[in-house]
Length: 104
Image 1 (cartoon, rainbow, N blue to C red):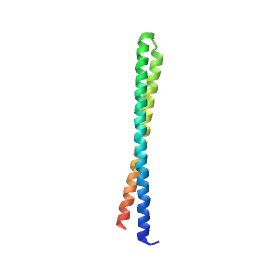
Image 2 (tube, helix red, strand yellow):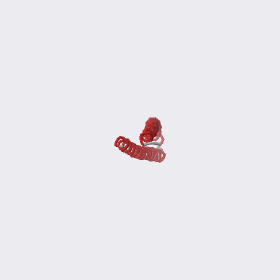
Image 3 (cartoon, rainbow, N blue to C red):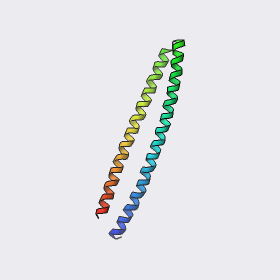
Image 4 (cartoon, rainbow, N blue to C red):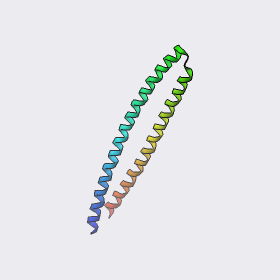
């Protein structure tokens, strides 16, 4: 294979990786939307528990649920941040590879 053919192959590989990154971003957005729905549902349940707590004195259950809700929200947020960092790293590496290919 000559150099031009190698460059074309590398461009094709990068295009495929671009599609994979796009797909990963789309999936992350879907996951974040689902997580938001789950959090809204948890908040709804939490509000119902608060109302029950006011009537029945279920403070212990309410506090436990609040803790679980906060823990889940923090965990999901941390996970999403880590995924975004990894995707940014991949995008930066892909950009650098494209730049180097153009300079060949």
